[in-house]
Image 1 (spheres, helix red, strand yellow):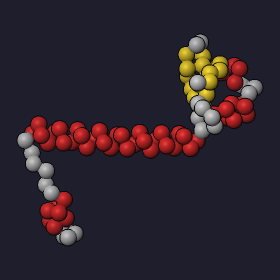
Image 2 (cartoon, rainbow, N blue to C red; image 1 turned 135 degrees about the horizontal axis):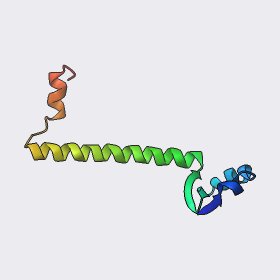
Image 3 (spheres, rainbow, N blue to C red; image 1 turned 120 degrees about the vertical axis):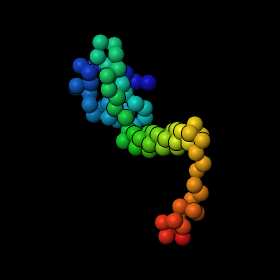
Image 4 (cartoon, rainbow, N blue to C red; image 1 turned 90 degrees about the vertical axis):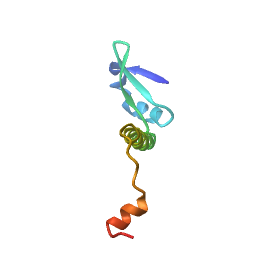
Length: 86
């Protein structure tokens, strides 16, 4: 993990961007990470993975809610038939 203070980073932006292609570079203020420079492709993958995980958690919560209420899910084929899609 690369780390650099914001003050140090001001004059090294080009080098930081190059370094971020290899690994995230964390910018610090008062010894606390306050920002990160990451490769855009890596960020895109992370955001896609986070969205997928959020979807999985939402489905799990919906199933738990249905079980808690004693509801029985309606089969997809039946939903399509009722909507005139089958």
